[in-house]
Amino acid sequence: MRIVVFIKQVPESEDVKIDRLTNTMKREGIRMVMNPSDSTALAAAVQLKKEHGGKVIAVTMGTKKAVEVLNQAAICGADELYMVSDPLYAGSDTYATALVLSETVKYLGGLDIALCGRRAIDGETGQVGPELSVFLDIPCVTNVLELQLKSDGRVRYKRLLEDEILDAELSTPALFAVCEGIVRDYVPSISDLRRARDIKIINITDNELKLGGERTGLAGSLTTVRRTFQQTSPDRKCVFVDAKEGAKIIIAKATEAIL
Amino acid sequence: MINSKKSAKIWVICEQRGDSIADVSLELLSKAAALDGKNGVAAVILGHGASKYTRILAAAGADIIYVFDHFELACKDDCLYARLIASLISKHNPQIVLMGATIHGRSVAPQVAAIIGAGLTADCTGLELEGNDSLVQTRPAYGGSLLAEVITKNSKLQMATVRPGAMPRPTFNYSREFVVYEEEYQRIDNRTPVIYGGSALKQGASFMGAGVIIAGGAGMDAKGFSFLKQLSERLGCAVGASRAAVNAGLAPYSMQIGQTGTIVRPKLYVAIAISGAVQHIAGMRASEYTIAINKDRNAPIFNYADIGIVADYRDVLAQIESEIEHFQRVCK
Image 1 (spheres, rainbow over the protein chains, first blue to last red):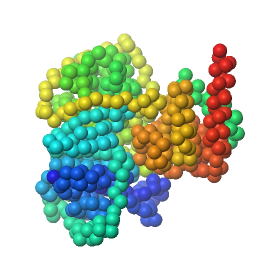
Image 2: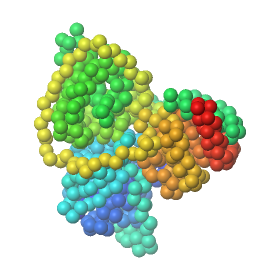
Image 3: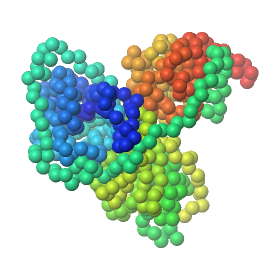
Image 4: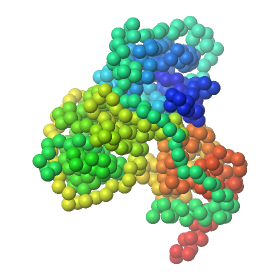
């Protein structure tokens, strides 16, 4: 069984500074981490492997710095590591990213289960998973809270909706985009560290995928950020009151808001 | 006039929710009509019994309504919906397709966009037309600390999902003329999931349409959270939790508010014993009115609050309790 996990490196804090010249985020000085829900997806993949066997294949797309999340993935139980990076792919929107990732999967020989996080904390679109599933021609389920592989190869899952938790089942291959924290992050042991050292990161560029520059990167993107600006949120002037007064305000405001 | 038109420039993919239409779908129909009513607005609705919603869709702004009504569509299978919507779009070529940024919408829209090859912007809070044809889509980025203006390029179709409540409330006119097209549904394949059932989130545990959310942090204990639960039943509000509280096992993930949970924008947000880490702020900063309770006068949550109470949360909860009792006595 081939379980492919898609992970993204993101800035840890969204307390970002904007470069006024380029309208982009200043990356220096910000710690980069594995996107939280991707980290959960990885833990879920490793758990599936422990229960049913198979291989966990970690794929990331980004700048060379993103090898850090692949190294982390190896320590947490991934068996194969792929770094998709090419100057042609820089600036890809979700559509172009999903296209590159789907070609990567085809290049690697397909998959049985695809796992990713429900959204990245930097872009917050949650679109790459569903778009990728279309390019791979497999069904996808988003906002997954729980998943179990059954002996007949089908996956039983729970999906969190706005007003209910759905209990359902789907045949594989399929893509699941998971919510944060539904599986505890894997705590590596010393032997995991040793094992991880021997796993080589394999680079994938456009030499392998042969997509060219027109369908990828900025040129292949279908959306573009024209400008970014600071949110002008109404300045809140916090008025401090004591507990008794505060309780009165809470009840009054709540009554007003509900009515 | 509109009736002679076979197509519309702006489409809204509407969502059936329970026995009604999701508010965000109606907000988008009214918004679409306000953006460019002259060139027509179409609504697409799928589901079992979907035909019965045509009047309200028209009243909110639809001139044309495409209906897929079939019992096999009852389970709202995102992948199936996406393929039906994509084939309908390919037939009529609208310029703009909008959908609510609900969990369903944020799964269906990207699949439609990928099938068609359309640019899609997620979770917009602002939409404007520029020069008649170009849709300027504004969305929060980086936890709401930035706004990004996004436009579509290299794609004739411009798509966006729009955050519920971000657009003005819809206006209804039940005397508008409209045309309904019943679309034929044919099963595509057998990839549809088998649904065993759904367990409704308990009253107070769903943020959908919640005007008031009272959220607790890790500074609270289980007793505090059970008090919040009682309070939610008495006041009819929802209960939320910070990530730290969820991690501490005080509340389930479905109640988590913040960057790695749900983003909410109620009329009133009460943050109890939540210090206000940036990740939490990202999930609640758009609330209309915020009241924060914390022991620490310097907790960052107070920078985002209208009213601050520096106190032990237990004291405030006790005051709320007696306030409610007083209120109920007066009402009797």
